[in-house]
Length: 150
Ligand SMILES: [Zn+2]
Image 1 (spheres, rainbow, N blue to C red):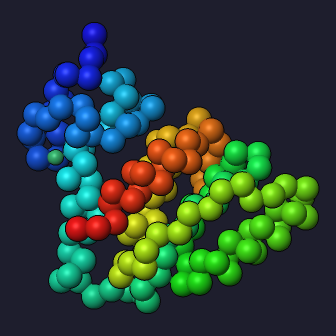
Image 2: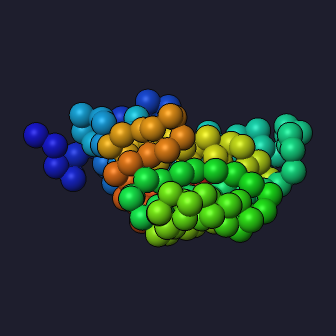
């Protein structure tokens, strides 16, 4: 049986670490991701300083609607984008329940990809590949925030 004192070997750095060193993943047999937290963070940012940044710096945002459905997006002006989501939601009788915006990042596309992976792992179902149901918003924010800073 799995207990929180168990170790897991990271598939990326091949190091045995306590389960707490791995982010949660509901779909996994042990409930944790294959890569440890430092590896996950490194994968997001590796090459960031050496490769040219394609596109301007920007933000990654999360929007959770009153139905619990959650959207991950990236934008240069996230408040504007979120107000568009809110407007569209209102047209369907919904409202925005929660929002979160990352600090500005040099490579928002990479952070968005990582954020989508995190939210997808936390969700119970996915709608059209970019809308997620059953997401624990606080866990998603916590995990994405842990990727942001070096
Ligand atoms: Zn690792």
